[in-house]
Image (cartoon, rainbow, N blue to C red; front, side, top):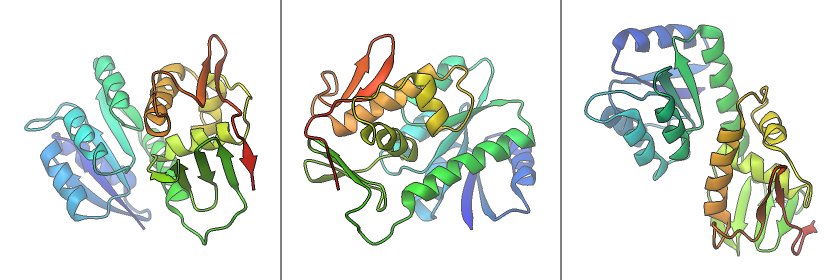
Length: 236
């Protein structure tokens, strides 16, 4: 059972999304501005948020920024076509995906299932095992426990950040284009993927690099893509 929060100041949209998501293994919560959304997340275990951008009291961008300081719950922004700059800003501050209005049930369900699958994979914990552990320099990733440490200090990653790191750390020195990363992690066609990948790479660097502006591990290969440099690589 997953708990999904729908936040939009348009009650008709909230009602429509509830219809789309009803009859499945979801418990649905609603909010009508960013402040209400934050209250719901603080008082309930929420596994996914559908968040409108333009709302009174606190908009979706501000709410996403606040929530990212407290939680890694997946956030899908609900945006109008005219809000292109807001989509980019939303991704910059930590949103995981966006759906452009008007949307249809098939797209909503597909994106909801995709984000929940990633969140569940990252959140599932098993007994610690030495297998599935990858280390480059001071960075260690355990594929089984979904744990990441940097210089023995635990680091909290979003599901997408974890999967990007998992892909790169398992294949040191291999260069992946933005399109390859997107298709491997998002499991979708890579049309217009470069911006989304770049945003998540930047967030990942901020968490695993001592100096994100001069990264030691997660490198850009200009014109080609990204790679993890093989410094002290080890696999157990």
